[in-house]
Amino acid sequence: MELRDRLDLFQELIGCCHNLYLWAYDREMTLIRSNCPDELTVRNLFSLGGAREVLLTYAVEHTKPIIMTNRLGMMWSAVPERLDDGLRRVHILGPFFTDDLSQRAMESGLRELSLSPDMRRDVLRFLRSLPVISLSRVFEYTIMLHYCVTGERVNVSDLHYQESESSPRAAQPGRKTDVHGTYEMEQEMVRMVREGNLDIQKQISRLAVTGSPGKLSDGDEMRQMKNSVLVCIVLFSRAAIEGGLSPEISMTLTDHYFQSVEACRSLPELAELATTMQNDFVQRVHKARAASVSRPVLECCDYINLHLEEKLTLKELAARLKYSEYYLSRKFSREMGVGLKDYIRRQRLERAKALLKDTSLDIRDVSDRLRFCSPSYFSEQFKAEYGVSPTRWRER
Image 1: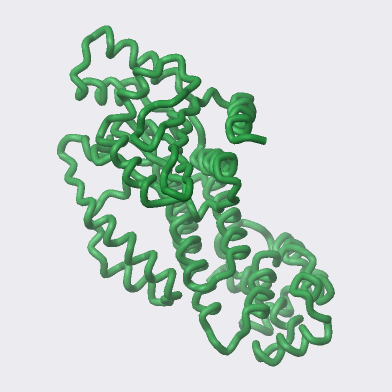
Image 2: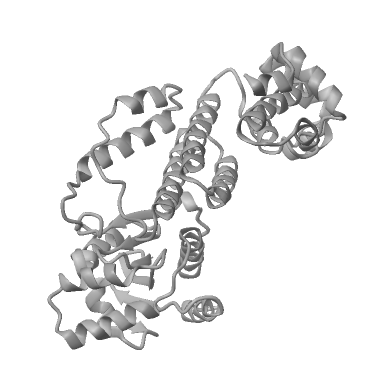
């Protein structure tokens, strides 16, 4: 199937869910084609904050997809199409919003553009017609567009994000924005994840958090924070792979935390999840960089930790790692200093501590969820491991 046919099919499939426009620009960022009925309006909006120039600079130097936003909170996904001699075209999906932008916010942003009343009214009408898509769905559409254009499969961790120099948050009166402080902190956090630095929380507390996280939503604070955490997951996932964590485990964690973020119902819950996610990536990278444990055994540990609420058997683990059951059992015991069965039991007890602390599940529910044969056996194992019963530990 030719590229044009693939893009037409992609456009048709996306249209079943959202009214999104597809654009193709040449290497000079001259429009080649689009299915948007109001090309002029969108092109003018796309130029805000130098977005066109920023995208061209990025496309010349990179091959992975990028997600961009301008001062009105409008967003686009873009995929460079390359030939041997460099950039050939840039394919863009959008614009769209990631939350319901209020009319007041849109009108405030439009007033800065010095438009005539008639033009402002037309632009406002167009903005109201744009679809609102969750950030996680934006990631999925961007990955699919990249595959249509290049035939390459990429992960969420391969995506880049670029915010307009004049974001809605930066434009708010009385708010001082320090982009340098935010970028500096972000890079420090990514570096610590990449290195598997277990002191990451202690180090972060010493950083000067003077910047703004960037405007990823014009909706309520909960949506803004969720989107910020989703972007952090992408950054940490990529850093963890660079630090030695297997791509399969990193992508599994990314999917898990994406779903967990969307399930959060309060800011404290989301903040705690963000900390857990960050520490999880760091600890896994730290283990992966430990020379005393082989990658197959680390992958075995990672798989166990991600599936503690499922049935885990030596036969299944050996088949996944392509070892005999006898060899895996011996290898695991030799490198980890504990048998496979005991390791699974201990990890389930650690998960039980978290469930007892962070949920209202009763003892029987925790026991059943973590596949202990009975609540009494679970309580017996818990007390043997930690010196107190599950009920007493929860009370403490």
